[in-house]
Every structure is written in C-alpha cells, then in structure tokens.
Image 1 (tube, rainbow, N blue to C red):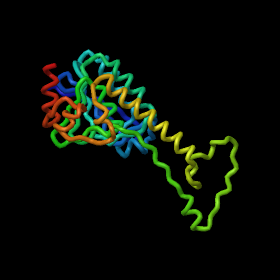
Image 2: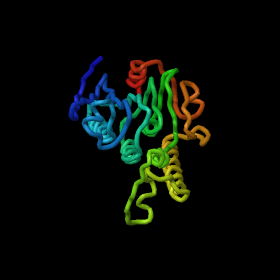
Image 3: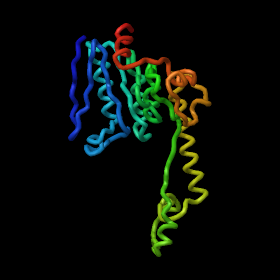
Image 4: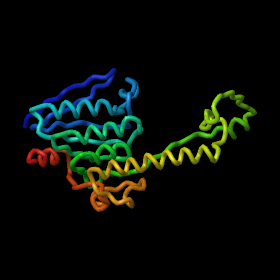
Length: 233
C-alpha cells in the first residue's frame, strides 16, 4: 500500500489530501461554507473553494485513478455550493462519496454529485431541505423599554430587521426563496441520481434505509473497505 499526503495550509489550519494506492482522498468535515476566515478554518470548517481545488488537482494527477470524498458534515451555506456541484460533474475520474458519520444538507448536495454514495450502517445521509432563521427581538426590546428609530431608503430595506416583526409580505418572499433553492437542490441531486420527492423533504436516513430511499448505493463498514473496493474500479 502506497500512501502519500499533500498538506494544504490555510491560516492556522492544514487540510490534507491523501493518496492511497492511486485513490485520492479528500476530507470534507465540519460545517461548510465559502470564503471562510482563518478562524473558521481553525475550528474545523471546510471551504468549498478548497474542495474544488483538491478535486481539480486530483483529476489532473496522472498518479490518481479515482477520487474518494470522505465526508462527515452536518451541512453549510448555499453560497458557492451550486458552483462546486457543477465543477464536480466535470470531474473525469471515478468519484465516490463515503460517510461513516453524517452527510447532511449541503454535505449531501456534495455527496450526491459523486458517481456512487456509500455509507456505514449507522451513518446518516439526507436532510434535503433549505431554511432561513431570523431572530425577532421586537418583544424583548419593548419589554426592556427600548425603541429602535431606523431611517431607511428603499421600501424593502428593513424587511428582515430583527428589531421589528416580520411582515406577511416579507415572509412570503423568504418562503419563495427557500422553495426556489429546495427545488434547485433536488434538481442537482437528480442530475446524477433518481431520488423520489418523498425522500427529499428534510429527513435523514441511516444505512440500508438510505439505500431504500434512493439516497445511497451501498453500505460499507469502514474507509479501508471503501478504498479496497475502489482499487478494483
């Protein structure tokens, strides 16, 4: 077994891509996002741009025969995610996603762009959904005897300000945006897969349940077993 490690340094954090017997292993761990700060990287987040760079390098490397995404992430932000998914679909080498923990929400969006999705018996995948959370502090401020005097230009500039209740019109716009991204999420998944809508309502599935739901292709005990399978691709 030949193992090489490529160390990628970003601020105080290093991201390592391993190569084992011609398999490039890209680790996608923790919350996900784009243009993350050194502080965020130091606390275990993964940047979409770093994933894209490592994918491109592995795809261009003549010593790499296939690429394995080792995922353990609860998800992340939308910004930059559809662009990463599009780049993944252009990867020419066999691409496999595997989790022995969690590949949920944005992390599953990434996993679904692989040629095969594998997981361990107790791992979870899915959470195909989108949400926006807004904090309404208007009642708290009122109880504290505080009033915010906001002067703005533009009818919708303060639609989502946390010092006032959300209007019905603003809520409808947010709901429409969330629905739009949910449809795009499902659409990207089904470029590579054939997942029924009933499996894409925000729930997660474990092991064999994920296969039955159409979200995964096989159950594998551990990373070494996945690598062994991929060396025979």
